[in-house]
Length: 150
Image 1 (cartoon, helix red, strand yellow):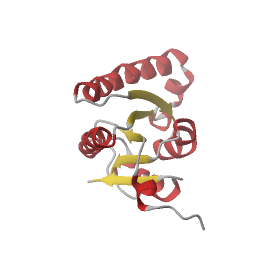
Image 2 (cartoon, rainbow, N blue to C red):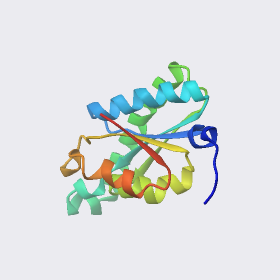
Image 3 (cartoon, rainbow, N blue to C red):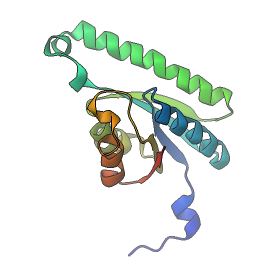
């Protein structure tokens, strides 16, 4: 068993926050801003383009998928600017694709290597809006600490 002192377990240098415009995600985002400022941590903002909510025709249409992704990339820059305007020194944003919980745990976390994941308990879209799906999945399978905001 690895021995960590208390500071190592709670000293966050890179915070990942998931956003989807839901009320809980906005609460999580605002908390992540405060936490990043307190810790002088890098803040990485992620939003997921949910391919399971596209029709077969939309998914096969590369122009449609590209347009949706481009819109999401532009939209997430507003979050990045808000964090920068609030005083977070190191901020970046990324867009992933797929099922949000799986994409964040299996793709984003290994790529970004954050110390902490902050998510809202309810999602704005589809069946994923109920706690017990995306947030629970991330809390259960994430290799890092997860803070779920309600």
